[in-house]
Structures are given as structure tokens and as C-alpha cells.
Image (cartoon, rainbow, N blue to C red; front, top):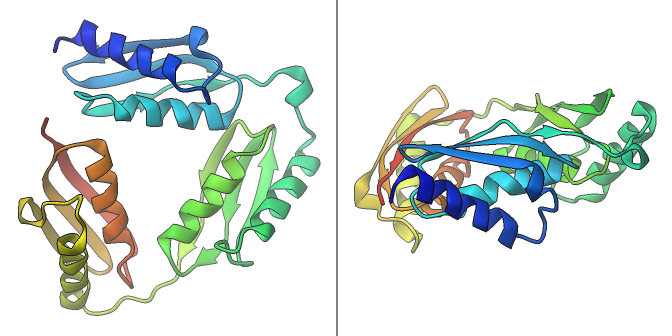
Length: 217
């Protein structure tokens, strides 16, 4: 598949996804499997959904999401009101601990605080990104330091990989050091890539994941 065909397939996928309503304002280019999205969308959630749609397309190796969020006048919010809505949404989500806080500056949401697990950081960002009026998110939530032995972390991740039907554990390499997990090897799709990264983050004591995985179609 050449770059022109890949870009056309990404455009078709964007049009196919009903959650993305600003497709006429999105330009797509491709260079040897690297896809770039440019243009404007009406919400931060649409920007996020556009990236997910591009990553679903066979042949996409990476996505550079340069989309800008341009809010319609009726969706613009005062920062204080938007912060209140973000905090309310976080409070109502049982996966997000009360240690998470947020500040808002001209629609730009910064999440702060400390949590025990990466999924809690991800959930807070997901919830905040769904609200109208948000134009961008900075996730500055820290993970509490609960670092177990590197061998224990590596062993648990390898077992998780072996249990998961989506992953070929033999093609993946794991190393750990001071709470950082490094993943390398080849996966067959973005879905498999995301599954491997999520499994690594789920291990107790993981503070960061160095993602060196490559996608081989």
C-alpha cells in the first residue's frame, strides 16, 4: 500500500466514525506509514477520537495528531465553571481517587495530584477530555512510589502477556529498572500495541513505561 492509499483509507475511517463530526476540516498525510492529522475539530474528544480512528487503519505505523480544537461560541466556558464541571465529573467516577485535582486556564485543563495506579491517571484524563469546553489536557498526576523488586515486576508482566489472547509473548522483550519498564519487540496492530502497554502499566510498582514496540503488518 502506498502513502496516497493509506491516507485515503484514514480519511474513509474518519468519515466512517460517527463520533467525529468535523471531518471536512481534517487533512491527512502519510509518509511510509507515519500519518499526520492537521486541521480543526470542535472538541478535545473529537481530537482524541480522530487519533483512535487513524490508529485502527491497517498499515498505520504512527499518528502525529496536530489537530487544533476550535470551540463554537456556545461551547465556550468560563474557566471557573469548567473547573467545577471537571471536578464534579472526576468525583462521580469511582476509578478516580479524591487525590486528583484540576486547574483550568482558557480551556486548557491541567490535572494534578497523586494516584497509585496508571489506570487512574488514564481514567482522570479520559473523563476530563469528554467535557465540552476543554481544548487541551496536561496530565501532571504523579504515581506514588511503590517500587517492588525488578524481578518481581518483570515476572508479573510476562505472566500477564502469556495470559492475554491478543499477545504473542514470545515476540516481546521486557526489562525493568527503578520502576521503569522497557518494552521492545514487534506487535501486529495498534490494538496489540495498546494491550501490551496496558498490561505493563498494570503491574504493581510501575512508574513509567518506555515503549520501544514496533508494529509489523
